[in-house]
Every structure is written in structure tokens, then in C-alpha cells.
Image 1 (cartoon, each protein chain N blue to C red):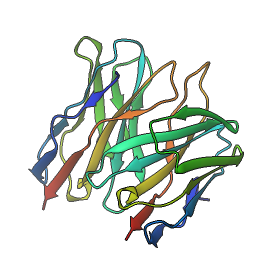
Image 2: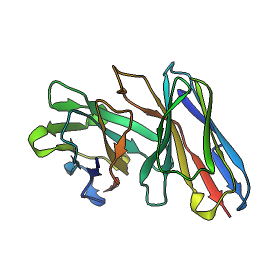
Image 3: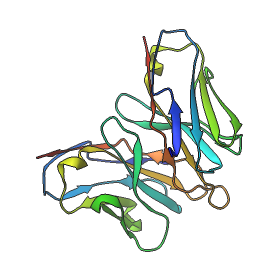
Image 4: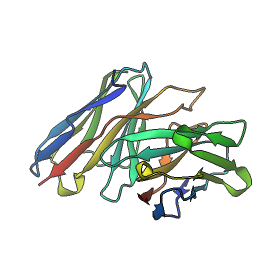
Length: 116
Length: 113
């Protein structure tokens, strides 16, 4: 009964390739997020979707494109991978709390991306 | 811009020692406050959170945190740590009007048996 799941757990690929990471949540939440955790463990939000609508889009290269087919899924597609994209990517979800705010975010297990 | 500071980057303690990890945030409005823990090789798990009410919040595994609004702080405490508390601890803040959760840089805790 995994709450937030991600696939794959590990992804090793060559520079220049295109890859996707999938995220699914079964908590019934309406907001989902992608975070990047770098080698120093620093966590930074990349994107957020609320009911399939993009609500947060941080300063992320446009090689990164999130896609939300429904409110339970938020996938991350990365084009032309670069060495600097190597990191752990975490998906999270939360329930909307009032207007413009959100309750606790629950995180997935992470996807460790290594670009060679 | 809103920011979260965790001043202790690495903390080493012996078992049974008391723990206090500092967290300060820069935003002056109404906020939600969180502490997450990341055990080695695992995902982030919520330890505790503060939304409103009693500023002393109790979480899982014997952790607690105190929100001091005048100091913009939300320090994490545990009276007696165990070896199994070895992990990375993250403080996080979001404005009540925002979906965006801002994380501190994390504190790596090593508890020696």
C-alpha cells in the first residue's frame, strides 16, 4: 500500500539521452511535486501540479518537462541529459489546504539518476 | 526571498546524549513548519509539523520541536538519542498562502553507540 511511488529507483544513462521518471500517488491528493536533491543533500522544488494544472515552475532548464495525465500521476521527462542532472529526484504529494495553501507533503522513495 | 537556515551541518553525539538542531526562517508572515528525516538511502519522512496552536509540537520517535515566533525559529529536540537516529534532518517552511515548501540545507546527525 505504497503511498507515493516512483519508477525507476535507479537510472543510469549517457549524456544526451532522453529519459522519464514516473510518479504515482494513491493518497487521493490533488497536488504533486518534483524535487531535486543534489550531491550535498540540498532539496529544491522544481515543479508542482494541482489537479493537472502547473502551479509552480522554478528556474529549471526547459529540457525538464513535467506531465500530469491525471491528478494521481506526475511524470518528469528530461531531454538531452547533462552531467549536472545527476541527482536524486523526489516526487511528493499533498492535499490542498484552504485557498492557495497545502497540507503536509508526502515523499516518494526517490530516483537516483546518474548521467555518464 | 524566503529562506530556511540550519546552522548545524554536522552533529556527532554519543547515545543517550540530548539533541537540539537549530532552524530559522526568514519569512515574516504566517507559516507552516516541518521537520523531515531522511535515513541513509531512504526517502524523506515527516517527523513533526506545526500549523497553529500549541507552539510545542511532539512528533514521532520521541522528537519534539518548539516554534518561537519572535525568533523565527523551530528547533528540533530529543532528550536522549539512539544509534538509530543517525540520519539527515531537514527543516522546511511554507507560507500559508503558498504551495512552495522551502527546505533548509539539512543537518547530518551521527550517533555513536
